[in-house]
Length: 100
Image 1 (tube, rainbow, N blue to C red):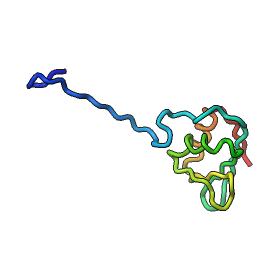
Image 2 (image 1 turned 90 degrees about the vertical axis):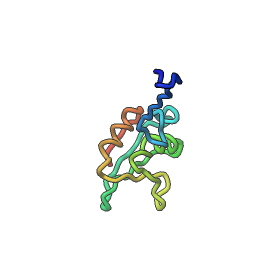
Image 3 (image 1 turned 120 degrees about the horizontal axis):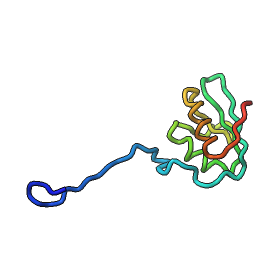
Image 4 (image 1 turned 45 degrees about the horizontal axis):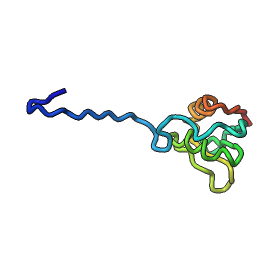
C-alpha cells in the first residue's frame, strides 16, 4: 500500500493473547490427565494436579490470574469468577476435571 511519498507503509497487527500462553495451548500433552477442582471459603477455587503438570497449568490458567498456593504445594488457585473458564480450558487441553 503506497503512501503519498511512494514509500511502502508498514502494517502491524497485534493479537490480544496472554503473555504466558501466546499460542493458546499447553506446553506439552498432559502426562496425568486427572485434575481436581475444589471451591474454597475465601471465594477461590483450588485446582490440584500432579507436579509434572505445573508448566501446563501455568500456561493454561496464567491469563486468569492463577497462582500457586504458597501454603499447599501442588495446588493452584484462581478466583471463583473464572472457574467455568478454567474448567473449559483444562478440558479443551485434554484433562479430566473432577469436582471435590
